[in-house]
Structure formats: structure tokens, C-alpha cells
Length: 181
Image 1 (spheres, one colour):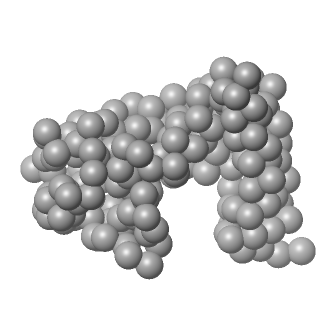
Image 2: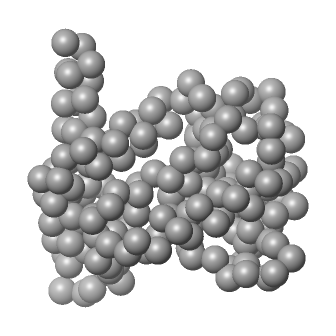
């Protein structure tokens, strides 16, 4: 059985520190163009083991300002990845490990950057799932266990990702049921 190269690290409190640093650089550049910058994904859940890759959602009011946001992100060294984007969640790549570019020439932790409009269902799912895991340690434990098992058996990242889908959908279903009560 070939190893996938996917490694789940023990939780590291520095992930939150790194997010706050990246957030500060982006917020400084984008200013009033954005509503919020959210740390989502497994690295945003204290105690949860994860791949050491931050997931960051930049929240904008609507698509009318998206071109301005793209321009500002390009000046920081990001580029729009249209092939990985869909309505409500636009993906951005990094030109190199020093992105976002700052005067200090910092090297940043690997991260995935998305721009979401505030009405985006993807944004709502990211935040709901993150908050659920933060408030439910048993669910976070089960999710980490699933991810570690998938990392051992899946040889491709898409298979690893799709292996998590049923768990994520079940949590989102629980959240929707609770909100419907």
C-alpha cells in the first residue's frame, strides 16, 4: 500500500498565531473592502490534529467589489484560481512561500485562501462546521481519527478529501436539524 504523503500533525497553537499574522497583512491591504477574515478548517479547531495548511475565508459584501479585492490580493502575491472557484467561493493561489508579500520578506505557513460573499452557502458551511467541532470535543476526536485513517489508506488527495465528505455532511445535517427546531 503506497503512502499518500498526507500527514496529520498534532494540533499546534502556532497555527492560530500564524493565521492572525496573515490576517493582519491582508486586512491592512484590503481595509474597508472586506467584512471579515475567518480562520476555517481543521487548523482553526483547538486540539484537532490536521494537515498543517491554514484555510482562510475573506468575507466580502458582494461581487461588485470582487475586482478591487482581486487587484489588492494580486499586489500581495496571490493569484485568482478560476479553475478551483465557484459561485460564492473564489480560490486564490500563492506565487511563492513569501506570499503575502510584506516589507520584511516573511516566509508564511502554507495556506488556502478563498474570497466568499457574505451570503455564500460555502462560507456558512465552513463556519458552522468549524464552530460545531470547537464546541463538541467528541466530534472533533472522531473527525481526527477519520482523517488519520484516510491518510493511511488513500493514495490521492481527492480520495482523502472525498472520504471526509460523509462525516462533514452528517455534522452539517445535525446543525440544520437543530436550527430547524
